[in-house]
Length: 238
Image (cartoon, rainbow, N blue to C red; front, top):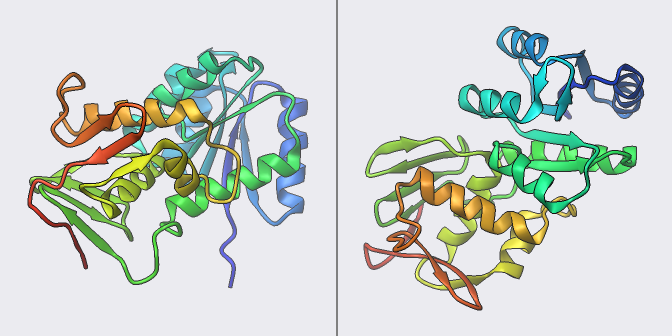
């Protein structure tokens, strides 16, 4: 039985919100609309959601700030929506904690594909069957719970950050090219763009306490890609 996805639409433009809601409901999703950041926080506290669709131009404040507040409290996939198409806007959304970004006007079929893609990642569907726990040196990744621990200390990550770390962990001690990382984390959708790899690697380093100038865990191999150092001399899949 297919589980119905629940999407919280946080959108200041009511006509756009209603059109978006009708389309998603028509395709089997459940939705709830909030017109501002304050009501969105209430809905998040009171309900259970699979994906947040967040307008960055909200009537009661900065959508990026709302994105950061959501990310601090909940590990839900967030798709940021804005009217600016520059890469700087996309990067700002990712740095605020979003998993993906869409530019208005967008096509509803593309939106639906991206909602399903981030939900699949959050549910762990990108991990290969049979592999539930991956240990690399002091790091342990648990696919079912999207849980990361470093020296037994929990590290809060987004679903996309987990997918990146899992891809690096599977090839621990070896260089993974940026193109390969894009391929492994796009989940049959085009939501991942080249710059997002660098942004999310930077965020992962910060969360793991890795010095960006002399990283101990996630190393940059100039002109090639990234490498997750296997300090224990051999990673294990359980």
